[in-house]
Image 1 (tube, rainbow, N blue to C red):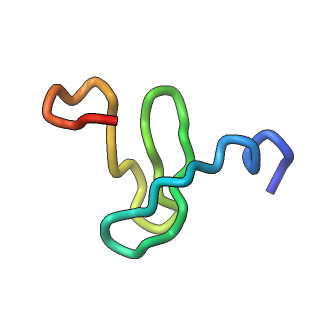
Image 2 (cartoon, one colour; image 1 turned 180 degrees about the vertical axis):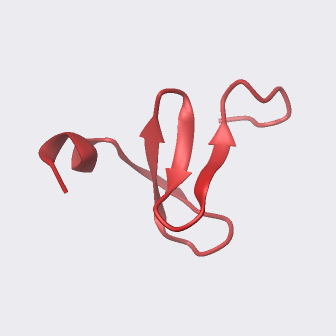
Length: 46
């Protein structure tokens, strides 16, 4: 894992596996499940 990837690791856990999510371009990505949250979704609140 690069320093940039580690810096973008979020505190939010994945709702499926509780792994820390990574923030990528307005999306929260689980290393196992892919995109979990997308901030363009009007029903998701940060």
